[in-house]
Image 1: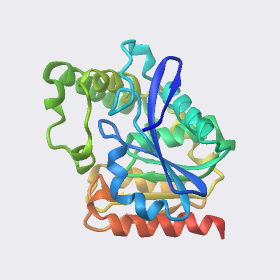
Image 2: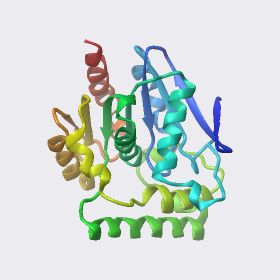
Image 3: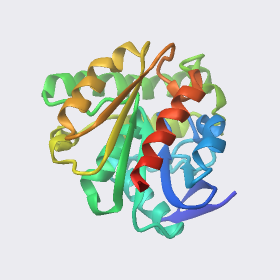
Image 4: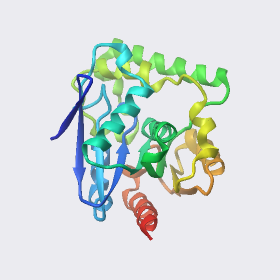
Length: 254
């Protein structure tokens, strides 16, 4: 499987199909494997690129805590697009992957042709709400330090496919990538000018209000609620998910 090296960190990625590029980013503690049931449908008319974030799966787990950040993740995404020769792409992801997709658009709007935001929150305007989130993220990192990969537990469905070499990268990613520094991403929503789709599972209760908020704040955004699906709507209801995404991305060309 191909890897790219950026600043001494190897990043695993995969390419399926041909056509305009669709870059999908997994959620925290998952891997690119969470998309395996969607590859056939999403790569029929597009070049689907999936990858493992640093600290996850088949990518490297740098020892330096400072190697894990929103900025590093955005740079990894840009490097992947460079490597596959894509000046622009449809950019999307689930949960943390969706947040990073919004962050990528904020940093590189010229490289994004459309956004696909799945079971995601856009961050927090209020400092106290953000700090409460960050506290939980740091506690997650501490739990991986204490319990190792056993801390994964059952979790939501996207984690079931994940294979990690150790929990060390997950602990550092929780502290450096899952935490948020400011409100820049949520404040950027009204400035998004590309076609956008917000997808959420009907049973993904913690993210329903956030999905409504993003659909209202992103100009012209479409929102799709997947019935009988939780936080991993692409796994819980793959056909409904694929149909919604394919309709959206095929419509972009039209």
